[in-house]
Amino acid sequence: MLKQSVEKKSKTQPIEGIKTKILIIIIISGAVLGSVAPFLHMLSPRTAKEKIILEDQYEKGEISLEFYKNQKKVLWQKYQFIGFKNFRRFLYAIGLPIALFMCSFVLIFFTRFSNDNFIKKGSFITGTAFQFTSIFFITWTIFPFESDKYDFNESTYYNLLMICSVLLSFGFYYMSKSLAYRKLEIRELISLTMFLRRSLFKKIDSQESKVDASIEKEKIDDKVYETLEKVAE
Image (tube, rainbow, N blue to C red; front, side):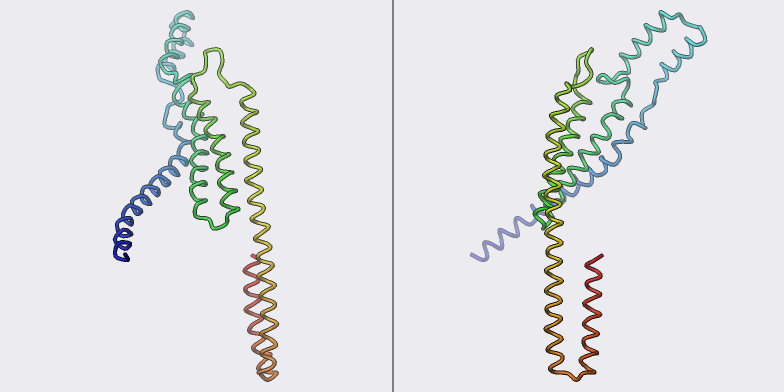
């Protein structure tokens, strides 16, 4: 029976190792994408060369107003990207939402490694709220709006605001609760330390001479206060 469990464990270990490596690669890739996404628009030119040439020809009077307007419409259709003036504008609009989404994804992923249930719940809920916000604006960026409408209804924004407000309230509630419990645990630890200090001092007084007892007490106090200073920091 023991041999079977050992063999089963040895078989699952390589699979777990592969899963861990895949997760690490995904997290690193997501972090890199989230970091560079807000700056990707800089790789695309502000204005196409054809538009610059057209503007220059019109300013010099080399082309008529009618030809200028017609060509401007043609170039708009050529360089526009899902409703944006050009691909640079699209990257600029979607960059920050992608960064927020990846940051919230990393936040939610790392909650699994926390031993504090309140921090775990608070971080997960807060990350979920950020994901709602980022997904909303990513959707807004790629959504095929009608030609006379370039935005969602106002009620959509209010609904998102309400959902995110509720989620963030719960998230901050759990985090503040974790902080309160942490302070309570520190107080209990300090109380226990001082109780043990007093008990140890009584034992030293009963077994050592006054001089030796004073030296031992001083050593203990130095160690206790050094530890308490670290906790206070």
